[in-house]
Amino acid sequence: MNLILIVDDNVEFRTMISDYFTDLGYTVEVADNGREGLLKARAIKPDIILLDVMMPDMGGIEVLRNLQTEDGTRDIPVLVITGTFFDKNMSELFRQEPNCREFMSKTVELSYLQKKVVALLPRK
Image (tube, rainbow, N blue to C red):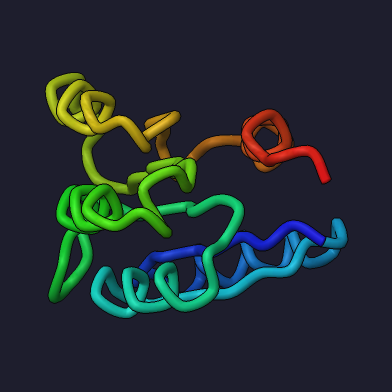
């Protein structure tokens, strides 16, 4: 069973994504801020992380960079999903991080997001 970690402070978005992937048979864990997300990533070693950009306490770029510092989390693929103004410069900043595999808007269609997740998950 593939494990997805959703790190997002927007409860409605987090719940919608969690419910969608749970209904598809995935195991889903959630964190409502970057610091909690980082702790959960270290503890559960998810197969993929869906990460928000702007969060209280610790933002998405800090989470990405902290994931890179540890052997157990550095290879976890991360899809960054933002609700903030979609700035090309911000996208490029995130894409420079080795574990950031995609940068997309929260307006993304769920079926497209699912295809991206499936493409990045390890074959079990």
